Length: 194
Picture (cartoon, rainbow, N blue to C red):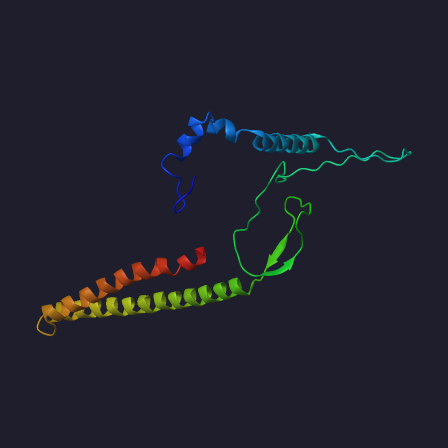
């Protein structure tokens, strides 16, 4: 039986069957069964070796008993406390280290005060400026009150010396300065609160 171009002839497999051969029996015959048995034996031997516990032996001696426990995971403390401060900044001095015991009220670190001293100086300068502004508005208000009183006195003596418009200007200048003083006075207190 010749094979043409890598193909069985049309009667190829049937020819074996017609002669009484079953291809499945032929495939599962001798060498195939031997290979299967050999692989099962190798697998069984490997499983037996891997599941057998390994023991270490040592010479008997007297001494302290040491117990070693190996574990994986994260060690968590029983009690964890977050420590923080009301202010932040560069640390000038550190009085406690990581995992040191500390007590209530103990100084742990000193923050560089230069930043806050600068803020205090700025706020004090702003407060002084606002206090000066309050005094300026107060003085201007007093001047406006005096001018309004003089204008009213002049008007009472002779209505022709001062017009209604000029008298209104004096009155509304005084009212405007009173409003500025009401606004400026609380502003001079706010920086003290910071």
